[in-house]
Image 1 (cartoon, rainbow, N blue to C red):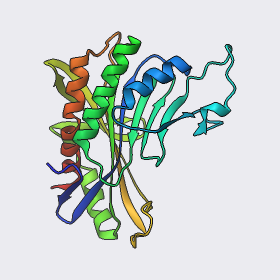
Image 2: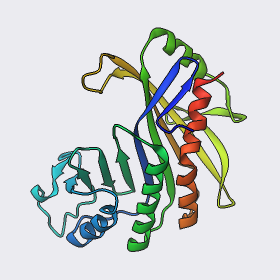
Image 3: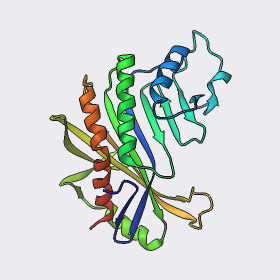
Image 4: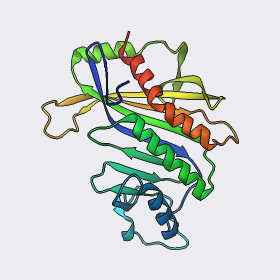
Length: 248
């Protein structure tokens, strides 16, 4: 399997961005938590800048934000100097986002799995959902979009019918994580966007954003082995879903 591109017929999709997510209780910003997170993440990414992730001050340096005991900061993160790596802390989840020239799914998922496992250990937090969201893009043409639209409206994926899910096209597929039966939502959003790649002669690209996540289960929390299993399989989950959209 090639993590960087997937080819079928005249479709060539490039992996341009990846997001890995765990759903947890909030980890607020303070100096102790910052140093703990930096100690975990610095094994993989250096020179990370603490940032505020609130809607009113997106990507503002955290030092510019007044902190009081009455106003804890639950929306914060770390950002690399070139913006290629981010880790976001929100009230309900933690996202790791990577957007590099040579994106590679297996190494990214392994890195995220290790970071999440260390966060779980250090903060003794319960992880209730897992998600992997890769973004794929290909050069736009009317013919390609027509063919892709025909593929998108297939009725079954791995033998399961499409369901309505938050105004997206989605499928719910059973799988196993460490022999545990788990249901996965496979969601897709497709669009035509202006090519974000600077200096390219291609004006527009077809953009496919996948979101593969575990179905919530009441009072269920994931153990480290299940988290590792999910992210180890995530590149294959995504590859099979992309194959579904680009092959007859």
